[in-house]
Length: 479
Image (tube, helix red, strand yellow):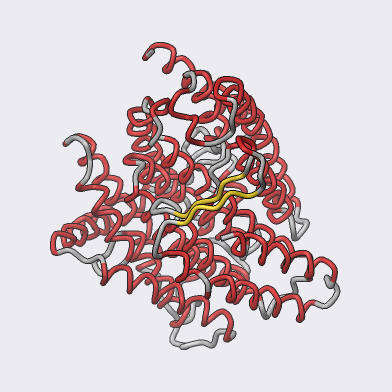
C-alpha cells in the first residue's frame, strides 16, 4: 500500500527536477500512473493493514477496505484519463509534477486511518488544487482559486481544532477513538471538511473553480477533490460519536441534490452546468452515506471525468463554452462520447450511473425521500437533454490518440460497471429519463441563468459560517 502513495510522489519529484523536458515528464507521468494501477489487483482482494513507524499511539496506520476501494479505483482511472488527454498539449514538467503528487496524496487520504495524517494530506491537496486551478494564469482562474483557498483554509482550521479535541479526549489521532469523543469535536470535524464537500451552501467556491479550471483540472476537482469529504463522511458515520450526522445528511443531501439541479438546468455554460450537477450528485451520495454511496462516487468520478474532458476539449476547439453554439459544429466522435457520459449521469440502463443511483433510490429510508430522489433523477435527465439533443456535424472528426484512449477507457468502464451491476428493476430509470426529456422540451424556453449571489466570495464565506453555526446548534439541541 505504501507503494501506491510513494511511487506517484517520487514520479512528481522527478518531473519537478526535469520540468524543462516536457515530453519526458509526460511519458514519466503516464508510466508512473500505469505502474501504480497495475498493482491495484493485488491490493483490492483482501483487507490490508499497515502501521508506519514504531511510535505507539502516534504511529500512522494505513488500511484498505470496502469503503476505500471505490475511491482508490476512481483516482487511478481519473488520473490515467487526464494524463492521456494532456499528452498533445503544452504542459510543462511542473504540471505533471503537481498531478502526480496529487495522485499519491489522494491515495494517502483514502488509505489513512490517522486523523492528523488526513489533515496534512488534505491541506496538501488544497495547495495543489489552488495552483492547478490558476495554472493558465487567467484572471477568472486566479479569482476562483483564491476563493477556493480562502474557504478551504478556514474549514481546515476548524478541522484541526476538532482533531485536537479528539487527541485531548482519547490521547490518540487514530480514527478508532471517534467512538468516544464529544459532540463539539465531531461537529468541528464535520464542519471543517464540509467546505470541501461540494454540498450546496457549504461549498460555493465550486462552480467558479470547476468551470474556469483548465481542461484536465476540472475532472480532478469534480471527480476526486470533492470526494474527500464524501469518503471521510462515509467513514466517520460508522463511529458512534458521528451518529447524529446520518439524519443531518439526509436533509442536507437531498437539499443539495435538488438545488444543484435547479441551477444546472438553467445554465447555458457547459462547464458551469457540469459544476452545478456535481453539487447535485454529491447530495445524492450523502443521502445514504454508506458503501453504496462509495460506489456512486466511483461512477460519478468516471462519467463526470468523461463529460468534463469532452466539454473542455470541445469548448477549447470551438472557442466557446456555450453548448448551444456547439450544435452543428461538434464532430460525431465527440458527440458519441458526450452522449455516453450524458446517458450515464442520467442513469440510463446498462451504464454505471444507473447501477448506483437506482440502488441508492431503492435504499431510501422513507417514501418522501425516495420521491425527492426520483425527482432529482428526473431533473438530471432534464439537464443532460441539453447535450443529448445537440446536433452533431456531418464530419466524423479525428481525435489525438491519447484523447481517444482516455475517452474509450472511461466509456468502457461505464458500460462494464453497468452490465455487471444490472438488475431488472433498473428499467424504472428509463421512465425517469423519458419524463426528464419531456420536461426539458416543455420548459427549455423558460430557462434562464440564475443569479450567482451565493458564489460571491463575501456571501459564500458568510453562508458557510452560517451553515457551520447551524450544525453546532443542531448538535447542541439533539444532545
